[in-house]
Image (cartoon, rainbow, N blue to C red; front, side):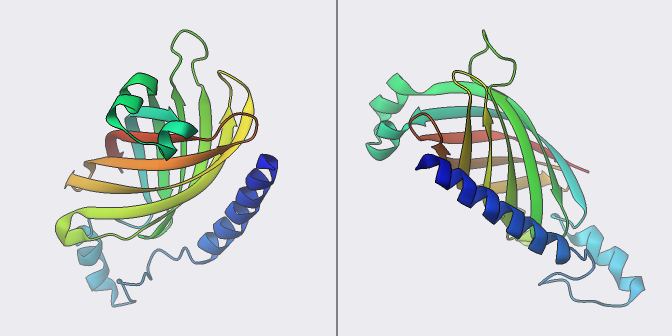
Length: 193
């Protein structure tokens, strides 16, 4: 049954990625209609969240099992949560659609990378507030403590201190093939180029 979740998520990712790639004209977005060339550089300068944007993430993670997600309490999170850290990269074709890849570890004594995953991301930038809420869906592979495929979906929020640096927080629900599902949260710094 859980293997079907991964297949559905993988099929959805492929379809979503195809649609995002076809709609990835960086000069036209919902809030950035075509205009004269002499205005284009000024508009891109004013956008905090840009088209053709590459960024690097450094983050901490916290995960809890399915039971704790369904019966959330501070004590259960403290007693059953696992902490880790990771690195990621993101690329936005336009201001709204992008792809993300990450690797993170929670078992420092075992594998260097416990989980590797990719996601399709949809964000809604609010440049005046320097905020961008986002949703994402994706999947990946877990190497430790057991090997298994997984799918995930989640929501997040990014805040930019300056045009090229900020913080982000997000949470996701992970549908695992061979173990219990779990929840994962990330908090970190994002540097864009």
